[in-house]
Image 1 (cartoon, rainbow, N blue to C red):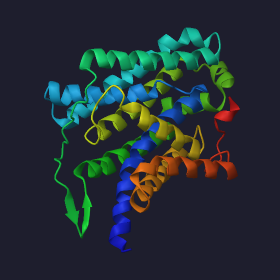
Image 2: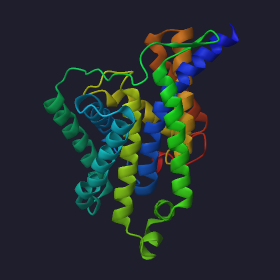
Image 3: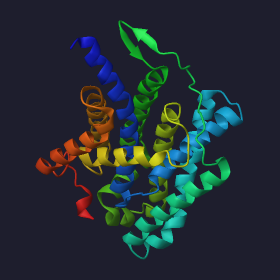
Image 4: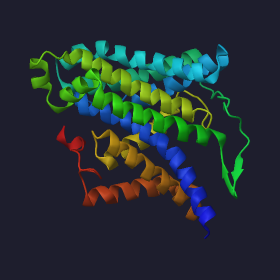
Length: 292
């Protein structure tokens, strides 16, 4: 097996793995800050793809502007989710979990009412003709994923480490009671966390949209893998989610090539379970969802 073939498999795995990483980052950010698993995240991913489709195809904006508007509008949806979930947070965390699940179902049904159940094609902004480089073929959309996703991850890291708001969000993630006593608005930080997490899901949805048909149910399979990637990396650790997503994508691509595409998901999850049996806290050692 030549280097070119290995590179081809790695590129394919990294391309889809980055999508899983972005989804896993959203899960991890929300869990780390709020202690909440957002079961509506799959639907937010789907809404992001639809928002991008509306601005890009329906309204005819250039892709960079449509991308920005799609991400911002989906982020605003996430921001206002906190207002819906806030009354439930005063009762019990379990009610919030059920609330996110119910909101996901509502979003899926609204999408079906507005856009229909049939999948819609999202035109690839860089075209669909594969690019050959040194015997290696790569899809233009994969190149776009390799450009946008790392820039977003670097921006988020700088934002969380350097900005005043990012420091406040990290303080809430480390100790909610102390942060609240220091004058940090927990409700505002929750809203920002849900908004940023939703915006990240929208980035993943828009980048994945030309690869998948945009449909009301498109988010669930990707979100499950993103969730598994977050657990593999160490649930609550966004960097771990990135690593977990990339590993998940490479395993999936290698399994499809060497064994069968029919079993690639089974093999990926089986390897994930095996890793967690020996390192249950995840690759980077963060607490998993067991702490709930």
